[in-house]
Amino acid sequence: MKIGLIGLGKMGYNLALNMLDQQHTVAAYDLLPENMQGLDQKGAILAHSMEDLIAQLEKPRVVFMMVPVGKPVESILSQLEVLLEPGDIVIDGGNSHYADSVSRSERLEKKGLRYLDCGTSGGRDGAREGVCMMIGGDLSAYQHCEAFFKSIAVTDGCLYTGPSGSGHYCKMVHNGIEYGMMQAIAEGFEVLQKSQYSYDMEKVANMWNHGSVIRGWLMELAENAFQQDGNTLSGLKGIMHSTGEGKWTVEEALAKQICTPVIALSLMMRYRSLEDDSFAGKVVAALRNQFGGHAVEYKEQE
Image (cartoon, rainbow, N blue to C red):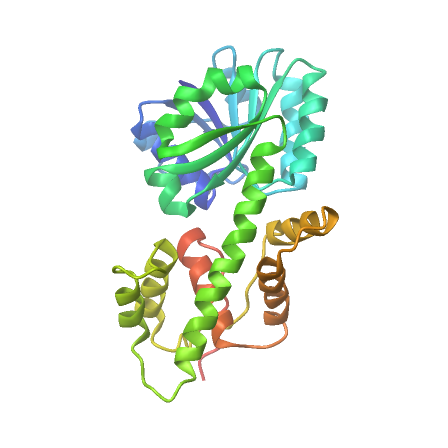
């Protein structure tokens, strides 16, 4: 399939490489030319403008957006509304709020455009080797793109979730769960760190990831973080930034009167971390950096 990919950041660049590996033709565009550097040598077509990108595609055109939430998505959509034609397909692979995806779908539908909200998980490694996607929106658009989605996804990592908004809603809840899981791991390591014993955190994480009930990718990333930044993560600040999806999950739970104390408290801990430093905060910050390349803050060297 021929795909127009907009946004070549941490996830988008690796997705482009993934798509090329699967023999898709990729026309790539980013506002920052340096983000596209080297993709042409891998076989991608580098577009110099939105108009140039659309001109490279075949009808029905398929445009995959991998840009930050909010104004960047709106800016791209306002241009696509003018450049695309009825029957064309727009995929939002970012972390947009599901309600925004519903309204955008309705807006584009009036112009004959088909919209898919695609929750994308797996971090940079997943984007490169096999992503996990939860996809809502126009069924005919999904059917047209189904083989493409499955080709870039990990085995069984692609699901059509239903009407517009359902993909990003599923990803929102996914990220809420992620908050809670990371917080539990972080708190456990803080108890170890403050105990009377001198644990090698890297070795503990490695051991826990072999046969224990809490084994998994996040534990593997914890091991990597301790290997890179030391047993106490002393160079890191325990500041845990958030993208907003944990907050949206809690807001949705409150609106529907659903009890989600673990997710809610993990969100509160994100906010607390902005005021004070803690070892648990360092662990979560390190984990977010490991899987998604999210920025961490380092202490100044004395």
